[in-house]
Amino acid sequence: MKNTTQRTWQIATHGAGLRHSQRGATLIVGLVLLLVLTVLGVSGMNTATMEINMAANMQFQQDAFQMAEDAIDIALGTTNYSTDAPRFVPWQGGDFDRYAVTNYLYAAPPAFGRAFSAGAGGFDAFYFDTQAVGRGPRNASSQHVQSFFVVGKALE
Image (cartoon, rainbow, N blue to C red; front, side, top):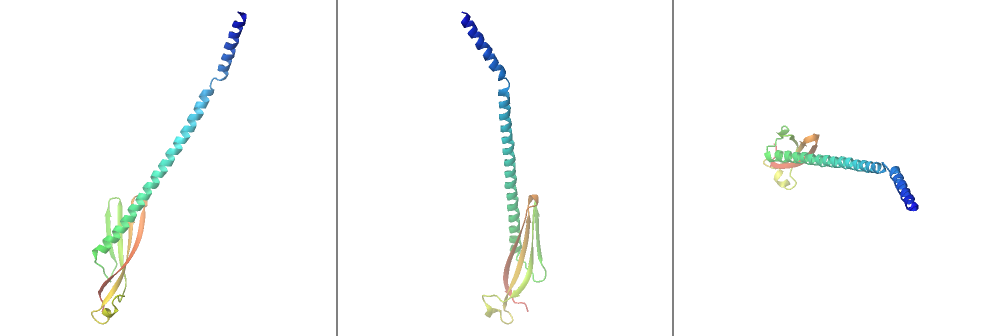
């Protein structure tokens, strides 16, 4: 009987000693894992925020591009071109703005019908440049230049 009691006493003391020496290790391992997960979460949120900003900036740049294209369409659609002074076409709305300036460059006989351009009553090709600027949110801007010519009665 003495043997069994001694054996029970040894298990109890060694078991308690092992339990006593490991006290707090689980807490430290848990806290380290929690710290690692927190760092990964914060890093993921920063990455997601940066990607959202990049996508928004790309959208704003596209808005500015479309504004400039629209300004050119408005300038060409008016068909009110002048050889005297630049033609300014403003248009504004909301957070965006766009404008276009059409400048007369020069007149020359059209390449397709030089025979028609000789003498009085002939035709010339009048060359113009339209410079358009479109602006969107967050200072996004886009600038376009469109050149075109209009065939009309020759200047005398």
